[in-house]
Length: 429
Ligand code: UD1
Picture 1: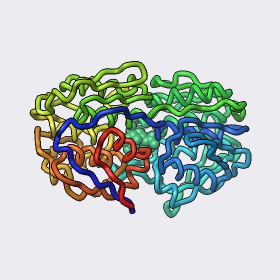
Picture 2: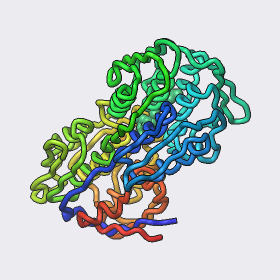
Picture 3: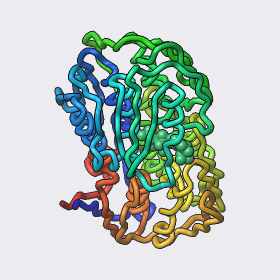
Picture 4: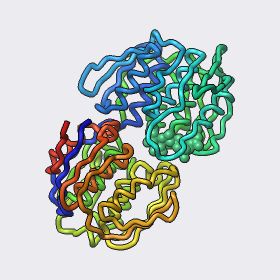
């Protein structure tokens, strides 16, 4: 089990240089699932080198979808021999995105069975929206001994579906299922995260008929299998990685350029950091922090953060942002509105010296500035794991971060990227 050893910078703005953002985990995983909708080979570029991609590729192999790594960040997927069947249980239980395979698989093959999908323990994470959607599209859904079975031997048909809750993966899964269904599907109260219109545009280039992706109402006219025809699909830059780098840079960098990103996709975060006092601005496909060494973190202003569906403040940036708030001057409020278990990690920040009070599982008050002290940490999930890394860098003294596999699930070669801008982070095997 590898660990990250971190020497704290004690709040000094010692980092400088350039960080290149990798392809987005939450875009790439959906693109892998989309390969099931294709009659021919699908080529993906800008694929991040992260654990979740390996896990989903292995799951796909189990249902007959073969893949090849054709470059450092390039892969091909071929679903010519896809079979209906059972998704591997331990692998499906490792990642939430395993559920996304069910839509294209059911639609293409007429049947799929799978366990409750796993992933971060940040709340109950039910799958009722998925099941209700499939049933509305003509499938039967049964559940026995922890296994769900969906059947639609005659294929799926279009349906008018209203989501009770806005869900990113339910929107993507049913949108993909509808591509091969008979007739028209309308998804209402759909999620609008940038990965969704990006996926729809690519599917449309290959023959799908999707309109309205990126708005709350998506309409899909079902049709035959898609054809990539040799074109490739470039995975979006990761807005969560980019945003996390922006937070790290605001706390600890003098000069930092974050490149290969779409600043518009995390504009609310940049606005919040700027409002607080960080000298940060978007320039084309980069975000730059400039002259930050002159500004002490304890001159930064407190903030009220309320997580929200896109274009609101991403729940995946809530934990790193809370670390930022431990360093600013005054009382900040954080409201986590999406996942009920997503503030539990703050107990570890308190152990490091942060002044955080939990009002209820959805709300904390953060009083700053606090000196954080290095310690041994056990990352509880992917996003909080990265927040711990930022906290360890801000702290005085050394830290050891265990459970690095959580960070590796979503962030490519994190220690190499951070070491290149001067961060004292080392991986110990
Ligand atoms: C996706 C992202 C995750 C991000 C989250 C919110 C992927 C692989 N993961 O997760 O990084 O944190 O969006 O931006 O893309 N819900 C139900 N029933 C359902 C489905 C969801 O009640 O059937 C609830 C969830 O418990 C949660 C809310 O809906 O409270 C939103 O969750 P959702 O958007 O589905 O998150 P994911 O798609 O799992």
